[in-house]
Length: 289
Ligand code: CP
Image (cartoon, rainbow, N blue to C red):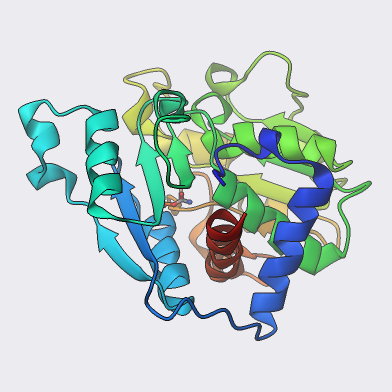
């Protein structure tokens, strides 16, 4: 089966994927004995998603192929569909795809007979990131219902925000957004960070995605940090058991102060670790259902 957007999955199915990821954390073993091949095709840069999908596939004893876009026939004009169809004909068993175009998968669904795992589409969806965020939250609080989160920063360009806001609301969380006016999005529950920081269970920071806009935000980075960044002064106002999250990569000294990255409330590196187990659960689900 394809995993393209969490909107395609019920709350029950989402919790099943998280339970499966937890079982992998607790030592569950699944061994495809080198008989399945997962192809990673990244048309946009990635460190965490690419290599944690790769590690997840290796943990399941799958073989992997890593597409090198720069030296591929896309440079001769080959389309996304023809590229993916080619890999299907080569005999791969699963695709992990990241692409700059929102909902790139719409042109593939129904025509590609191998499961597709969406590793991020433009500003649209990032289901594996949302699942690892949810796993991190569930392992911390044991629940979703009633939790409050503020997502701070470049909301409008963030597929992480778009994926998370929708699924977290479905899971019973209250989601606030915060940050500069240029990055706000209609329909989301906007608040000033300093007015909500002492009430929320989770502060999730987002990177300013300079690659997705030219000069939308002219503000100097020091000013951004002062107005919207998470520094220790703000951390000290957070609830005792509240946590800090960031999908990364992060800009130290911009949306997050250097000393906050690894402070006791920060779950940023735990998120990365959880990503491997969530992606193991996703690959198993995609291959078996
Ligand atoms: N969080 C995330 O998607 O990171 P990468 O872009 O490095 O994959």
